[in-house]
Image (cartoon, rainbow over all chains, first blue to last red; front, side, top):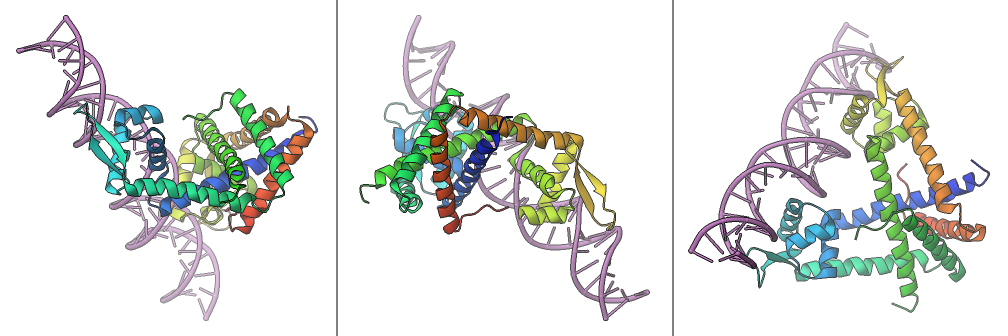
Length: 151
Length: 151
DNA sequence: CAGAGTCGTGAGCGTCCATCACTATGAGCA
DNA sequence: TGCTCATAGTGATGGACGCTCACGACTCTG
């Protein structure tokens, strides 16, 4: 409990506030597109690894196969993906992005770029550098603490 | 789509990754204490505004009174709060932190301080300054965009 | 004191996300 | 050819959250 603690607390407060704000904003945006957080994760996954059987998605997302069935059902109902026949394994499907699904992911990417512009476009270059350096430092520390992205 | 975009994207990526990481970590910690996100929010609220009738909590948290009933039920069952008689209004209760509830909030605060030390303790002072300046800038921008804390 | 407004709750509903147990179908090998 | 294992689907649960509607209990005001 030394004199730096209040400085750390102030920094952490900002970080946590930002976390909450960004999270809420993200989820609201998704909801407007007809997506839920988990379904969006699945869309990202498909974008990254391409058409995949549900088993693979379950492993990639670290959730039970049954949960994948439900998520895929939802995405099929809302037109973001289809279940295509697997060319080699007639038991399995290839969950595949529809044009709408691809467009959705691309829109998310575009929105993010736009958001980046709004957030940083007016920021002095050196301040942005300072921010990124600080974030990288924090990220590295978190990584060292064993906190890392699940994907 | 100018040359700065990739810089912005890199900065935003870090911010979003941090968001996800901190969020997951927070929720995991809460779960270990037997708390859910909403119940925790309520505990913080009580810490801030003291024993309060459910109506006040509903307004402070911007949720329906009926929802408060459920959250308070949960917190009562798990021993974090009690419903005390309101001294002036026999229709209302004063939702009050139990010793366990107070201890939980204090532990959250202590954990946060400790986390701050771990995160920033080894960071050069000027880098920390740069980070905070950048975060403040972003926060101000968000505020200008209409994104602000609900509380 | 009667009527109107307030506080909290019971009942019911919906969404999201996750689980386990079980089944049908197909793959793959001895 | 059979037998076993793998892939998905269904059904049933469960928890966390949020909502509305209706209502009893109570306060407050005219």
